[in-house]
Image (cartoon, rainbow, N blue to C red; front, side, top):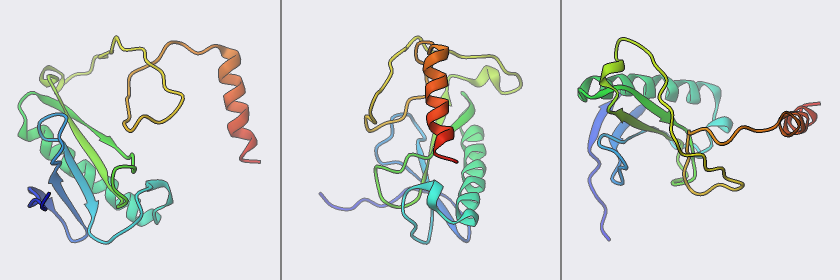
Length: 145
């Protein structure tokens, strides 16, 4: 399989944005720093991750404007597809009526995951019990002591 030419949509001095060659929605975009950093945003230098976020926001606004049926674009930092720091942007098609107002949009999907499945899902799962949430909160707090 040969290399494909990136379809660049935006560029700054330190970051570039191009269309994903594996889009799950029209306009799915990847924003990357030009300089290489490993793919986990939480371990990147603060100025690089902050710069990436600012670049992603600028490109998200570009996507919002480019697609008449999009009010917002989701920004995801996942980091397991390619080991180069990147943000994935997904235009939320079908939300045009929400450009000037807000209302909740809920999914009927209630799937939960015990392990990473190779993708991120933002839908809510079934409600967790107070005991379960307390146990997880304590586990997290204990690692910060």
